[in-house]
Image (tube, rainbow, N blue to C red):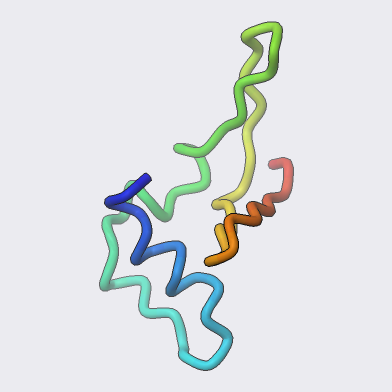
Length: 61
């Protein structure tokens, strides 16, 4: 999570335009993001938005 902190900060910063080329392509690929449910089943999500206060939002893909 620590290595993604800068990415998440940039994603939710509404004052600045997000620059995709500044970040690893794999991190931006929605195919690489999922939530593991209690039963072990993985469900795909879009790239999550992680806010400085710790709130996390995502959309199911």
